[in-house]
Image 1 (cartoon, helix red, strand yellow):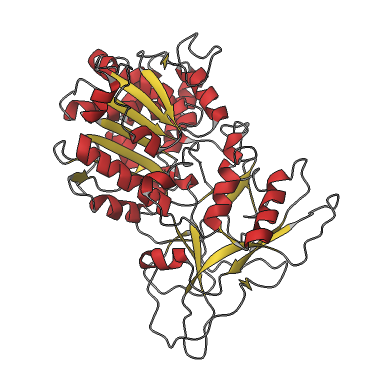
Image 2: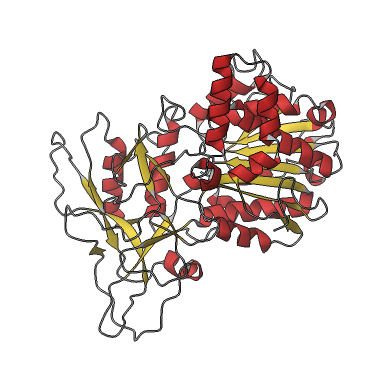
Length: 499
């Protein structure tokens, strides 16, 4: 379970095209250290996780979260529609059409700032239902020169979600019958659409003998060699990437503060084998007895540990607390640490896949020109502690409950993202902003006022309430952050201060 932790950035992105996650208006304080899994109609994924742990030993939370979200048959994002009021959460674009329209305005503005290149690739990572992109395309389609030379690339691993996106975005007839990878164009603007399993798949050069024509009219292989500009959008995508969890080992007589150890997922010793019993299996968190590869590789992202005299490690992983007793969360609310050395009970989370994704995008923009906009919920400064959540049907549940049926997510460390992008030469970085600042800078008030002129009284109340919700403080307006960057020739991203 600890293998392949430090793989190439593009390889680690191979499964990451999950739909974005979520409006998290609540806090899940007191999430338990072990969860009694309730009896469900289908425990296939739970059984598979249990068997894997028994065969290989405790698994990292990264592996557990990845399995729960993107297992080909039983993964959360792979088998049903999880968005909207009938799903487990509601995203910003589903609150108001204005959200996606303003992101479309940002795309058009960046295209103009880049000098209106003849060919451009518009990329969305984790498009969900396609709601955000559908609203964006209405704006993009109004700019004929942009729409004529643009192509749309969607990073999505779920066949179910691809089908849904195709129905929402594509012209009549494009989504009727045939293979899901058949050539299609968008309903608005007529942009050719392609789906990709991963960032690596998207950025792979075309085969030299390819006869496929790109939107510019050039052979796709030639266009790939010329590295056309790209505009990347990642809205509520990074929070769904799995995280490593770390916790300090207990203090010893030679060390007042224990070293960081990785938190792993294990099977309880009390598990019952009776498949008809309620809660047939129990999972629990345990602490690794020694430094794991992840603790070594990502240790520089954790708060420092004071020097201490080395002591022998335990022979087996230590369970976190007594059976049936939840870990006591020491922070009042999930969020960043304020630079202090955390107490033993606090779990710090690191998401290397988010850093790899941002770094790979930045390198592509530095080489090919373009811009990127990443919007998610999380703190401006990290590291992030105690933020991993599980949610079913708009309610929080214990973190290890019902694998495959619960959405799992964690706050995004925007400070770490910023530092990762800043390390890429040839990139201009915008300062991290709030969603309120971003939408306000893109003309939220003007757009709502324009819609109000043609709205009924009831529609007007809905428009105003939705807009206020998107920029509310406290609320979504400050909880959601935005990070934008582009190649240094293009300059500071629109609606952002220089970072």
